[in-house]
Length: 240
Image 1 (cartoon, rainbow, N blue to C red):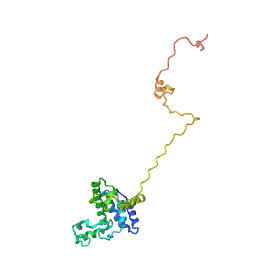
Image 2 (image 1 turned 90 degrees about the horizontal axis):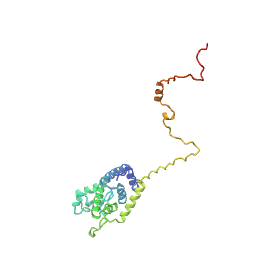
Image 3 (image 1 turned 30 degrees about the vertical axis):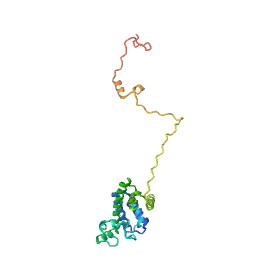
Image 4 (image 1 turned 135 degrees about the vertical axis):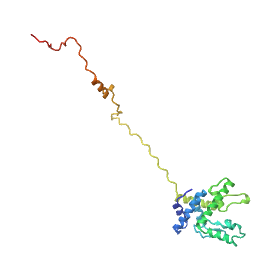
C-alpha cells in the first residue's frame, strides 16, 4: 500500500516529536519504498516502531539481542548467524552487522525483509497472511514445538489498535460525494395555452413554396371562351 510521505512523517512525529524533519523524511522514503516492494501498509511499520523504540535508532535491548528502530534480532542477521555467542563474543563481522542495524534506514530495510518472511511463513503454515498473523511472528509469538504458529498475542492487538488509530487520524477515507438530487419537472400551468412544436410550412396548409410560386408564374393565363357577350356588360357596337 502506498501512503504519502507526509502521512508517514506525521506518524513518526507523534512518537518522537523532536525528531529532525530531514531524518523523518529519510525514514519515511525508505519505509514507503520497502512497504511497496514487500506488500504491506507502511503505517503498520510506523505503529510497530512506536512500541519498539519510539523512533530512536540507537536503542539496544537490555539483553543485547535486539537492535535499532524495529528491534531487529542481531543473531539472525548476516555474519552473526555464524557466531557461537553473538551477544557476548561477537566476531568483527558480526559487530559490523550490529553497528549497521543502528542506522535507521538500514534497520527499516531489514525490518521489511523480516515482515515479508513472516507473511510467507504464516501463509504456508496457517493459510493466512493477515496482519495479525505475520505481526505475531515478528513479535516472537508462537510455539513451534507444539505446532502453534502465527497466533496473535497481547502485544499484537495493542499494535493493531494503535495502527487503526493512526489510519483514522492521519489517513481517513474520503467521504463519498453526495448524490445529486433528482429534479422534478415544474407542475403544468393549466391557465397557459399549450405550446406546440412548429411545423414546416407546406402547400397543403395554404402556404406556397418557392417552387410552387415559380411554376405558377410560368403558366399562361387562360384564354376567354368564345361566345355571347356578357349580358351585364354594355355593347361595344356603334349606334347610328
